[in-house]
Image (cartoon, rainbow over all chains, first blue to last red; front, side):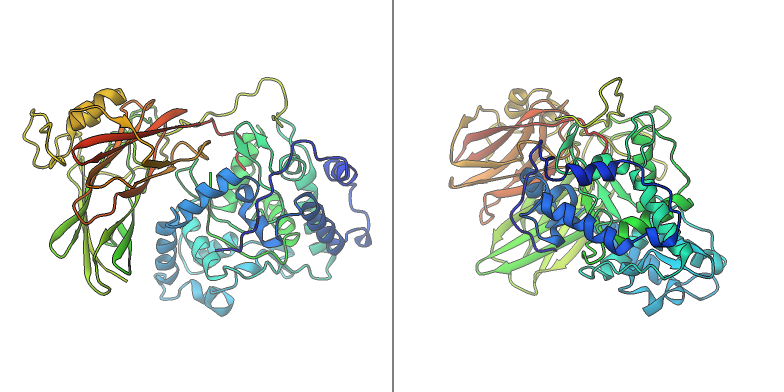
Length: 293
Length: 103
Length: 174
């Protein structure tokens, strides 16, 4: 899979050098007033720099392995399981499902550039006609509905298998999310960023609380993944789920776990969140499908 | 129907290394479903590997083997292009078998 | 080191080791049959056979590891540093713990894995015919922190290695 370097285990009290940036990251960002205050390019640079500074021994591409790049013991267990990974069955099912024609004779390949092969790294994208962010999961179900088929559940099973296959055909390709020079696209990006940094739920956590402030540390017994590269391994086979789950699954369950009310899969905020998180990981390779604890 | 058995058998020098991943719920009988009812035990009991008409490895499994079970072992012999036969039987009488070529 | 908010954390506890969210839909099989093929009913596996030819029914039913080993092999094992047991110190998840064993002992006929704190200690037992290497890797379920015991039957005698593996409750996820 990916090139692995020496594993850096984050120490518990590394805040001084990054405190300023972390504090900025944890407060809700001020509402965007004019388009010129939104600067995704600068954001992505600062985002990546924050993590590479925090974990100097990791290569940029290592971040896509989430908790496995944060802890040596976990890395070994993951390596052993990757020899014959648990997502193999889902991947095979995805390949079959992708090729299977709809009742009207068309197939998924007709809905995507390059027949859907090797394009995962371009999602999500901003659809200027619709004026909204379109994710891969959304595009897949829209393809089905446009061809007279019922949509799949967004969280697992067929959707996980399909996105697993499409991710697999893009393995190694760097995330290449584009934000067109369109105030609506910038607003969607900013909306996603705002969601990421806003505290919510009974536990009052933001995504950043765990994934920016505490990567490599433990929340109860789990080692936290860094936000950089967070979506590159999706969809994932989680031991905890004893099965596959999509980005939709992870967003909704994460909301539940911090005791907030999850949104519907593919709600606008989730689409914008995926847009933001993918953009700031531009340049990091797609590694999906992946395995996680 | 696609086989539940995935195999990678690689001959290298005098030995052949075999890895198998099998699609099976391996339900232990200790877990309840969403309604609060026990999901009955459903797990592979015996998994056999045969080469050249002889048994080269037999796994006797209980419910504590993980879902979608995996096993790895090696045996002396085994030539590239030859067949390896793998079969399993579970506690509910279901079974599957496949033949894989040694790479 | 806890990063959670301090008070009243009632995280959903996953049923470590045995959680399953899906199951195969059975085709009309209501009763669970625990009698395997070729099982002659109530007899114990022969105590001195080099390798049991039948599925070790009673050994899998035994609770503790000592009883399971006795049912399986009819003798006790002595610890040996020639049995190399590889298992993580902290399992990433109790449902899928990668554990392997290898040994330099000669004439190995059987290798078994036990998880002491599981409801039934015996997890897996492998028959090693002549010509097969004495080395096995598998993935086991662990209900909680427990000793993992590897047993190697070599030259008619039993040898063991033990390692404690910590299994913790998962938190919010990584």
